[in-house]
Image (cartoon, rainbow, N blue to C red; front, side, top):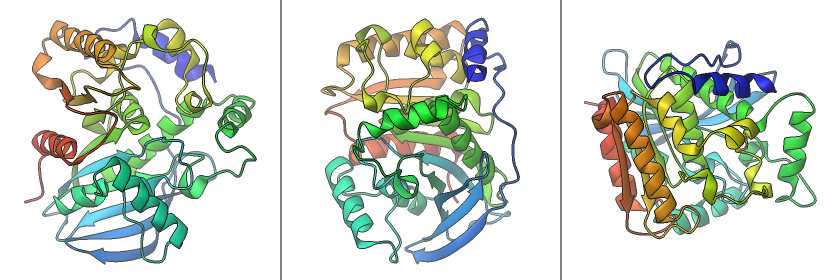
Amino acid sequence: MKRLLVCIALLCMFSCGQKAPLKLWPEVDPRMSVTLVEQRDGYTCSLIEYNAVGEERLQAYLLVPDGASAQNPCPGLVLLHDHGARFDIGKEKLVRPVESAPEAVKSSALQWVDKNMDGVFFADRLASEGFVVIVPDVLYWGARNVPQKDVYEGQRAVYDSLLRRNVIWAEQTLNEDAAAARLISRMPYVAKVGCAGWSMGAHRAWLLAAFCKEIESGAAVSWMTLKETQPSEYKASDYSMLIPDLREKYDFPDIARWICPKPFLFLSGTTDRLFPYESTSRAFQRMQDIYKESRHEGKLRTEFFEGGHHLGIPVQDTVSSFLSGTLGTHP
């Protein structure tokens, strides 16, 4: 349990741009298998299974643009889903479910993107623009949903269960996300690899960019603030993102020291009630100062958009444009 926390403490003694001493869990043979393939407009959507950590076979959607090949590689992207206190779907919050998916899953996914993403499945959009996209489920979401009497409060039980095995939930998620990054980085039709996410997906994205060498760029939407503005008592929804020592000793903007000098985009809404403008603005300034101190200030973008906790089409436009500029686009 203490491995990640100790390494994070050590990281704070290193200046921006130096190699992070954090070692992710040992790599395993991914042994990817394809369950089904569905042709879509300009790309394929595959349901895949692969090894990440431990013995569990993880499930993800893999979207590949038509024409991608070793001679014509595309940028790769690990796209990370949000929390939203909606657990019956995970990867389906970003990828249009395959036709054979249960009707309840398809209905939930449509409701989610209509409410939060202006009706657009962001992964499908990015695939149509030339990105190879992998979208895995986090433990407790989608195909990995764990039946609980009280599904919201059940998050505490998951955290405690993992802790009894000396595992921190957020550490396991980070390692699983890193496994997804390694998996697509080894695909012959993938060039540079980045990551992106909204809400909890943003939290996952900035951790992944900080500690996974395969990630070369990324974007985080609607997750950045200052520790002093956060309640001292944890809610059930905090446990999937909780790294105790990090929250006790360091502030959220410090992550910039470990992402730097990678190009990265942070976005937040001016009226986001979860991450208010004032605290987020101060956090953004601290992050800019970190990049400036290392003489990489031009590589970090911290911006606000009009609106709240939402991944609408204008915000998607900004993320897509940034990733295209930093990772390249499919010819």
